Structure formats: C-alpha cells, structure tokens
Length: 459
Ligand code: URP
Ligand code: ZN
Ligand code: ZN
Image (cartoon, rainbow, N blue to C red; front, side, top):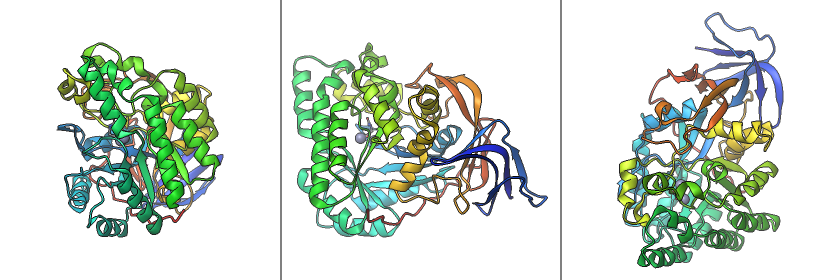
C-alpha cells in the first residue's frame, strides 16, 4: 500500500524542512507540501515530529560463536530491537574463526539472517586467516555484494590475524575496491598482560582494562593506519575508545590516509568504573576495547562533533548473566560484549544532540548517512530523498523515558545502560515503505529484511 507521511519536519544530514513524504513500491517517490495521493494510501500524521532517514548501525554481532559460547540474539530478536530503536539497517560482523572455512562461514551467516530479520542488513566479511584459498573465496564474496572486510588485530589464535595476513587482506581490498574495517589492539601485548595479571591473582573484571591499556589500542590504530598507507587500501577503525588512539587516527587522517573512524555507544556514555563494580555487575560491562577512564569521553564527543569520528555504532553483542559468569574465576573468560542496538539512536539523540554536544545534522550523519556513504549503501539508504528506499523514522521529541531491561526487545537479561534517561524516541518506523513500528511498538512483519547488495567503492 502506498504511504504518506504528512506534516513532519524532515531532517537529513544536510537539510531540514517541513514537507510530506510519499512512498510506493518500497521507494520514496515524492517529497513536497500538500501532495495529492491515491485514495488507498496509508496516511501517517507526523505533526510535531521529526522525520529522519532510517538509522544504520555499522557494527553489530547477532550470530557470534565467541569465548566458548554464543551471543544471545537471533536476527528476529535483534532486528525487532533495532527497529524499535529506529535502526532500519544493520551491518553484522560475519566472523568465522581461524579454524573455520571462510566461505562456509559466510554461507552460514547468510542463512542465519535470511527470512529472520525484520529490517535490512548486510555483512562485513571477517578475514581471520589468509591461506591458499582465502583470496579466491574473498573474490567470490565481494561478487556476491559484500563491499567490506573485517580484520582483528586482537584475539590472538581465534579471530586475530598476524601482520602478514593483515597486509595480504589490505592488498586484496585495494585491488577489489573494498574497505577494510579493523579491531585495533595489539594481540601479543594483550595476551602477555593478561597472563601477568592472572599469575598475580588479579582475576576480577576490574583487571580487564589494565590488560588492554590505551597505549595498546593506540599502537594497533597506528599500525593499521601505517598498513593502509603502504597498501593504498581504505580503512575504518571500529570501536575506537580513547584519546591516544584518536590522536593516532586523527594524525593519519591529516596525512591523507583514507581512514574512517567509528566509536561505539558504550564508550561515550559508560566508563571503566562500571567494569570495576563488584563481580557480575562489573562483568556485565566488560567489552573490548574496554570501557575507559572518563577523561576520554570529552575527546570522543569533541571528535564526533567535528567529524573526526565519522560514525557511532554499537558493537551490539549480547551475552546474558549466566554467560558472563563463565569468567567468575578469571576476567579473561568473561564473554566480551555489551548490547545496544535498541538504545543507540535514543541515547545519542538525548546525550549527544539534546545535551548540546553535537548538532542535529551531525547526529543524523553519524548515526545513518556517513555509514551509508562509507559502506556503499548511499543514496539508497541514509537519506530521505526521492529514489531512496522508504526507510523512515518518525521521531517523537516529546517522549520521555528511561532505559530498562524490563522493556527491552534485545534477547538478554540485563541492559548495560539501565536507568539512563531518553528524551525522544521513534514512534513510527518503516522499512522500504512497510510500517514496522507504531506508537513505539513493533507491530510489523518478521522476516521481511533483505540482504542489501553493495558494490565496491574504489575510494
Ligand atoms: O567486546 C566486544 N567488542 N565484543 C565483540 C567482539 C568485538 O571485538 O567486536
Ligand atoms: Zn572488536
Ligand atoms: Zn564488534
């Protein structure tokens, strides 16, 4: 059925104006005032509301075998949580381990999502080893519509690649015109520091941050940038958490390296004191790179405002309390990850835009448009424009609420942002013109999400 969103204030990354949006056949076909529409059109009154392009989360984990267990969400639960929170497209890390076959992993990750996600999605293809068949497999995967790779400089012997493998991945990425995303921590230093701390009986979650200090992330970020410069590839640092790493990334950008930077919601709003809480409360807040000293947050917000940090993702990665307890005797066994796919947009709007740290266009850019541009989804996604997919968020700026595990859709038994206030939330959310959320509740159809094919970008 055609759809008309009337009387709203449209806010794109580069424009703001009052107009109606008309969508048919999954696409925005007209934007203007007082549009004439066919009688069968569904009409949504957006008076008093902001109308944003569907938000894009560039970094999520849904299916994830990791640290002797599996992340808790399915694509059904993750996508419903995403949609309620205004995210209409997510990019999942496809993460076969070093022991797995990459192509089999890719097919498995695709099967997990197909017919299950209620919103659109694509993948970053992780390269966790580089052997005789990796190159031909990656060529096939890129032909199949995947335009970004992922490497881990951390997680030695599991996801982590060595410098040679990182180099080969970047060389191939350069040739194929795809971007390489990277988790930037020095794996060797992390594993040595972990072993030292454990041998001294320092086993609680408060030792996670000292085992992966800021300098270790700064080294990884600098190394990644240096490899990009010497291979000519374009790159994207995921979940950058601290000022020293930011300095390295900003310096590389200033030198002209084709480097983009993502930080994730937990690093803007939570700090290492959360992980220093006693026992399970601390374990809930264990992720990598770790929650940092609070002094870093002002640097992250400033860099987000100026655009040095390009995007805000979540690194959504739900492990429940029982799973966190796998690490009760050693922080090195706590499954790493904090969920956030549902909270990202509302918390960034509230604590970023409403708090005066970023303007509203930067908010839209960082949470939607910039990711669409970097990862080859633009202008199909990331903007409210004629010809774009009708992924639309009608946002109620007058809503007031509090984040709570009791109302979340993510499949988990805690919320890392418990008790934080939100000032505004999506009231209606559409995916390609189909209304999936009404009055802030999921009322749509499961399984209609599509894998969005992306072409190489040749940055
Ligand atoms: O702690 C995290 N970040 N867990 C998920 C895996 C990763 O490094 O992205
Ligand atoms: Zn990571
Ligand atoms: Zn991640």
